Length: 56
Image (cartoon, rainbow, N blue to C red):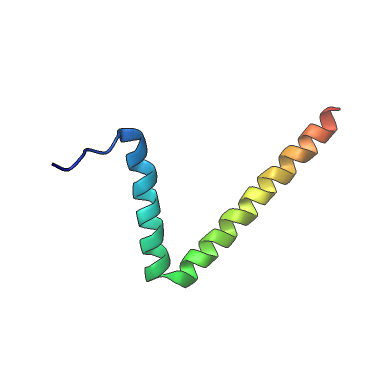
């Protein structure tokens, strides 16, 4: 009998599978997406640091 996955584990596993499929099928686009996502994350982080510094 196949064990049923727990609901909270299903979504992360599904996202990893989709990400790996995307990386294998379109590595150039995957790299561009990762670069854009990292740049966006760094922009948000920099803005939050600037905001926190202005509070003090």
